[in-house]
Image: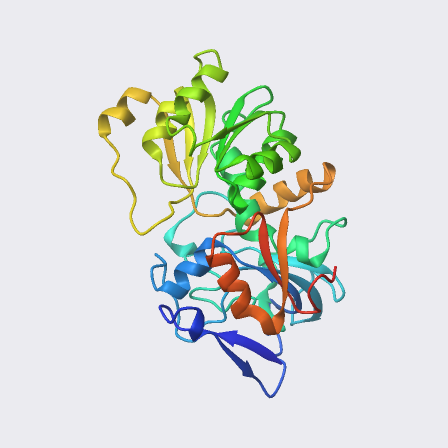
Length: 345
């Protein structure tokens, strides 16, 4: 079998394809998965750059996103069967409830990831792949889609909170999390206002269901347009993937919700505490989501027949080129690496 390995901070040129003499065998509670496709997320670039916030083991197999087929099960495994199509939770031990330090081990970081032909995974971390999705499409779900679902629903307590029908959602940009937030937000009955750069991307966002799109380059004070579009009421929820919390807090209503997914660039702009206090909103930082949230999201994906937006598919031996394409910022939708060949489903 073959797998890619890299050290944190080694960069794209540090990706090394290695041949292994044998396929590994699953132990108790484990499953052997033939990986059919994997996809890239921003966290994977951080691992290669050496700036990822969580531990990364030396020579790790990168990528937390992937999908494949179960080819063997270890002793005591009854939850999955040989032949099933599955994806894995990024944090294998995070089954449900709040995130905690005990759940820090993560695929593609402190644990080997899915840029490999075969992976041994914890059976308890696996989820079934929605039937209508190809392996390439399913490979995009574990990071970006689950993060988006958590951003939309993860604040719900005892039936309260979470995005509700008729509410207004703002998504920032056209990255993987934002595109999933748009599609899932529409599935939950929300009005979605998306921001992006340029008319070409705006047209794509309208095609995906956005109710309104704001070009933040043409209108830097996009938060003012959000208020205009909502008759001064502002948005109920903002999914902030850019770290522009100052603008997000100005775009959200009193007692609204800002889901802070992360930030782009080498540094994040400072946040004036007076803006935070004056907004009266909740700012919630989040990291992907639990297996229970993955399962909940998949129910919506399957019911609504949601298909992820794929930008480009690369072959397994083209993995470094896939990283370079993704790092260029030119993609719209997910960049995928197929173990069976570019374009295969």
